[in-house]
Amino acid sequence: MLDLFLFSGNAHPRLAEDIAAYLHTPPRKRILDRFADGEVRVEIGENVRGRDCFVIQPTCGSPGATVNDNLMELLTMVDALRRASARRVTAVVPYFGYARQDRKDKPRVPITAKLVANLLTRAGLDRLLTLDLHAGQIQGYFDIPVDNLLPRPLFLRELGKFDPAELVIVAPDAGSAKINRSYADRLDCGFAIVDKSRYSTDASKALTLIGEVEGRHCFIIDDIVSTGGTMVNAARLLSERGAKSVRAAVTHGVFAGKAFEKLAGSVFTEFIVTDSIPLRPDAPKMIRTISVAKLMGEAIRRTHYDLSISVLFL
Ligand code: R5P
Image 1 (cartoon, rainbow, N blue to C red):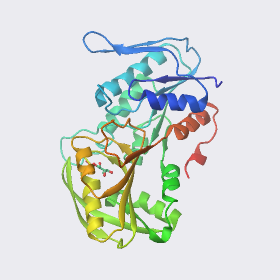
Image 2 (image 1 turned 180 degrees about the vertical axis):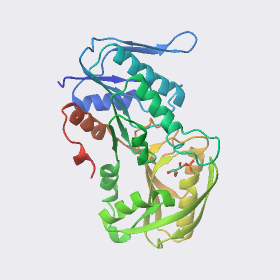
Image 3 (image 1 turned 90 degrees about the vertical axis):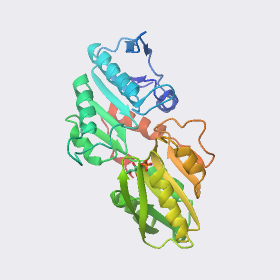
Image 4 (image 1 turned 45 degrees about the horizontal axis):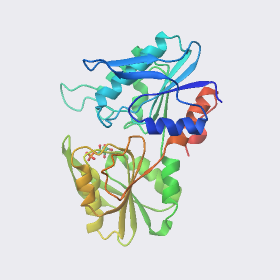
């Protein structure tokens, strides 16, 4: 058994169990519930003095809890471990919420990604292990080490099932062109970009397509699906341009508002998301999860032993 202490928040106990199983080390005892007025109550159930502690908690919404609830749980757990004299506290945050407000893109708006970074650091965090940050630069909002894993090894395994001559990797907007291009280069297959215009926080439209998709299988890759608008609009455009089939591989399945309804009525034949966020049971059948437990677990193991994690970035 490894000499590291894993703790789970309430956001995604299943993923924490899967990571614990990979590491052959049990999640440690803690009380994590609410006081009568709703405040988060944490009590670490074991002596952690001098221990290397990891707290697994995506800051997503989850059944019965909001993004804010889960963020507050993470902060209070870090505070409790710090005050209990843990040697090192690492937050394992497979989905880092509030990341999309990462700059002042208009006057008088906050930069919530930086705010959350400040909160975590002030709570006493030593390291952050996360997955596919909405913008890589968010690493720089922290003055502690940040490891930002990518789902690329997992997605490449799925994409490898297709004949490269028949496959096109599609970036759903200009911002994701570079990462999508890296998939197409590795697979030696086609590449296309959708020109997306966002006209409000939760609404966008796909305008034009740059690249050839006619008669080919298209895979749209993105870091996050929220309302589903970006994906559904891009898929419709690809279908209109003669794609043989349209699939998606997305890291974080937020599925806000009517996302499930939109996807159920779309042209997607398959929609892959990682389990960085728990998938709700009412998800349409074509949505399939692939697990990040081994990837995150291996990064935890390597962090604990001070080993390089660069082998995990395929
Ligand atoms: C945009 O930069 C992101 O990568 C996603 O494409 C976007 O946040 C998805 O949002 P929605 O599902 O609401 O269109």
